[in-house]
Amino acid sequence: MKAEQWVCDKRSPLQGQKTDPTQSSTMLRVTSASLYTCCQKVRLLLPPSASASTLTSPNKRPENQRTVDSLYELSVDIKKVRKFKGWVLSENSAYVSETAGLLKDMGADDMVIARILETHPEAILCRPEDTVAQRDLWVSVCPNRRELMSIIEKFPASFFTLTHHDNQRANILYLQSLRLNKRIISKLMASAPQSFSRPVESNKEVIHTLRETYLDLGGDEGNLRIWLQKLLSQNPYILLRPAEAWRDSLGFLRERGFTTEELLSLVCSLRASIAELKPEAMEQALTYIEGALACSEDELKQVVIRCPAVLYYSLPTLVGRYQGLMDVGVSMDQVKESPNVLELTTQIVLYRIQKLASYGYDVRSGSLDVIVGTKKDFEMSYGKLHLRQQRPLFNPVAPLRSAEE
Picture 1 (cartoon, rainbow, N blue to C red):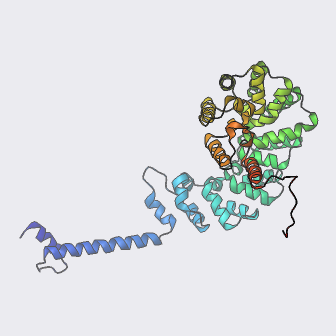
Picture 2 (picture 1 turned 60 degrees about the horizontal axis):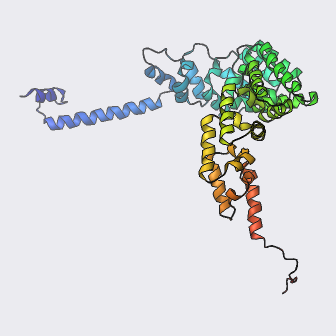
């Protein structure tokens, strides 16, 4: 008897009888398949805490079964947490029910709570007393708890960042002393929490520089607060920019011959973007525009004042957009007269030119002002041209006809 047949005989349930090897192999396959299906069913019935130990590799810390079960009861997607923030599940101290209870007290329903804990599971590691203190701090700058809950849902990481609590409080009190709108402050806290984590002296220095810049350029003291609010709402990260960045940008433009009034116009137009400008990049942009449009110094300044965006577009962007205009037959003089066209991408310019051409308007022989501006601006200009084409010209000499004729 062969070895294979002997093994099959030994595994046969009927000892002492010879079994067909083919029949034994089939029986083994059926048994294995049944066992696999049974194991899969049992695995599905296990709670997340039971399967966690099997999923934890020897090199990783075991998961806290109590934490996993508590999150599971809140309908949190454990697989998502395990995939992106798995280390949270291994922490010994977690406050799942306490965090969920606090969110519920602020008006969050079960679905919102689950979504917040999935997005930012680190929230369950915050001590309840620290979270309560953070809530009270944020309530001071939010009109109501409903709006606070909306902010937490969108920016959970900002709310549950509980470090530098004293710095946060000091920065809030300072911005409130400037009589800034509560919504502006809460937006800053949500979008740029780093601004509130650093010492208040750093933010005071930046605000002082902004105030000096605005007033030195002839800005009105009465409009300073409104200007600051627009500045901060447009770019919440402006407080993180060093004060020297403002001085460097304005110093460069002053050296290029811009007057105080022109600089004030640019500061009001660019607002927060001026803090992002670098003298080297501005020099490249101005040099290119000056050469491409054959501008004198005065003409170049007018181009910049009418289209401040040329200062912060990269050189490749400016080259590509200008070349795209040349490729469709737009002249250099047209771009010089309507420099705002450089704010549009080549694709948008082509679409608008084709749209106007379908109604008989050729931008190459007219002004580019009809295609510049926002989508709403263009639709208004396009609508006027469309109505003008449909409406017949009125002939004052022709005899009037009544509706009956």
